[in-house]
Length: 129
Figure 1 (cartoon, rainbow, N blue to C red):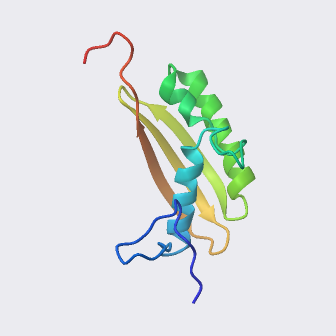
Figure 2 (cartoon, rainbow, N blue to C red; figure 1 turned 90 degrees about the vertical axis):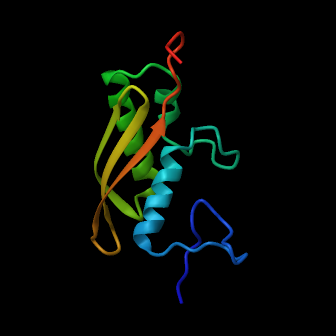
């Protein structure tokens, strides 16, 4: 039986290491981990990540969203290129949430998948609470 550890690593209710249910679940978990890891956050891989934290903690505008889309593409191609092909990425921001829409194809199966990842944004300084 071919099992792949779930990412991020977790312990199940039975006390065993969590396993990804399949390639799609593993790819989604790895994408989430890559998207929400800031470069410099991992001691053993300081370049890992794609800078979404920049949108979360600084102002969000079209230029920053475009730069973030580029950073996402670059990071996905570099770290997950063996697992998937990134077909499209869109980063958008509403008043309270960062939204990343990703369309990708699993290399092993050819399955096309779409996922949406969200992250809450902090309230703007001096904004209403």
